[in-house]
Length: 108
Image: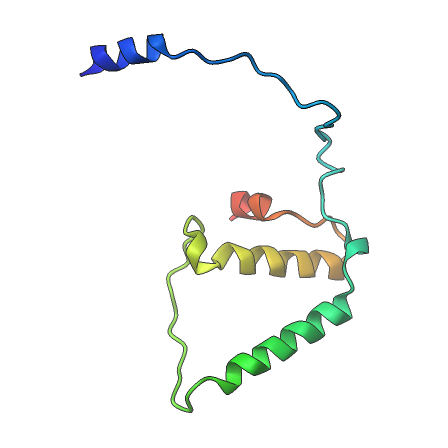
């Protein structure tokens, strides 16, 4: 019943917003881009290779991958994680700005 919902909403008391002390919100888009200074590419790549090799040894000899339909809004399939990761590897390779996962999702 829309009237009952409206009446219930009218009775809700929302307290005034009180920002936390000492917290600075960054609003500059350039300041929020990822920095390559935090990553050691060689170590990251070597760790991934080791993890992939461990996974490969657990597969049966008859294992075959099956293609999936690309779906950017389903976080359980990790499609956007792969897209964002590959986009940022490309960005590092060509010295262009990296993007976070949400920006990559927006572009996709």
